[in-house]
Length: 471
Image (tube, rainbow, N blue to C red; front, top):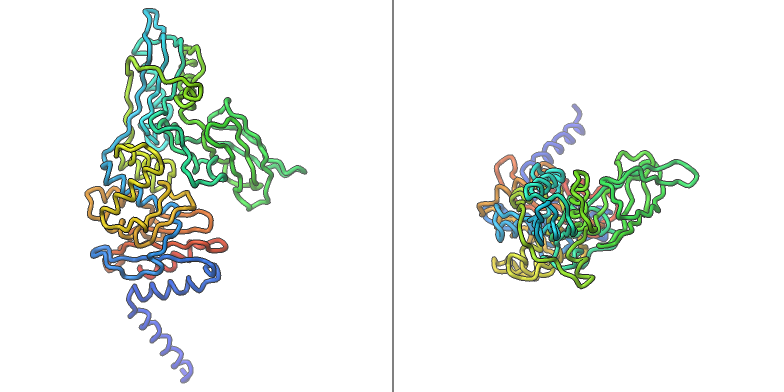
């Protein structure tokens, strides 16, 4: 081997030894600098906060005291607050009742009332005990046991306990008609969404056909303005359907040859949909209802109120908070976060609004030593682009959460990302991760990394390269 090759080999060995001798924090700082110098981050702000999970000591912070849009990493704060204030065994309750009386021939001379208790899982497919058909069957059985064979009145979805505003302030128009922008209701149903199956057509008009709607929504009109996008262009279809509306507009593009069956759209009035599904189910088995279904909110528009309940038929409990948080974080279900935030206000004796829930959450953590000005929170899911939370505040909350009896359930809810337990977050030009990691040597870390206003696509892989320094 000549001297040049020997020198090169020696240099390589020395570099490798130097790299191996570096501490994880030194490697992390170098990896951060690589990301900072990347062209995608030229106009971005990158927040990074890594704590020693055992002591809470700050190991590395970059822009850790700068408030950043969090996207869905905010769900870690919502979850932790809910566990603290509600308890891991907390359950929502939904009651089916009636007004008036039942005549000897089985005629209900009054109304059936579904009294919403804020349950975001009612009718959800994620749990055996909440599935739509299972809930409907329980209601039907309770009605039959009461001897009701005909209903002179109507079926009312009572969504009154949480007021009339379902969409949080700060959410954008492009989001609120889609499943991830479905707003909370005191009587939510089937996670407040329905599906529209689509097919892009390679014809002169580049039309997109609606194949079917699941479940059928006969009380809605769907105006299809979609056009076919080129193969590989993906899903750029959006539903524009505000709360209480009866017309949905589909706009954007749907790719030719796309593998997805269609889009999921927000139900504009979930309490009405719950009442409608119960009435439809009853009619199929011969229990007729004389009047159309309605809701507490719709009655209030006509200056009417929900009649006084005479008898409760059945009360259905939701899954526990631990079970709700599991899917909330695993699948990033925005609806659950908005329900939890309103519940924090509600169970604290305040009006159950998103604003009051946010203030309740901020006040809670301020009492635990977190700077309230580091928590500019406006919803429970992170969908609002107006949210600003510092990486340090989020990391401190994650650190404190380890000490609680409910922490194993919280930890279990966090998805696996890049070989770490990290909740992801993504909205326009925002990508973030927050959670925990234990390296091969047993060192434990609390991690928050967040980039705002990046350009291009595929930034997550570059965030992971930074975090790889901790492996």
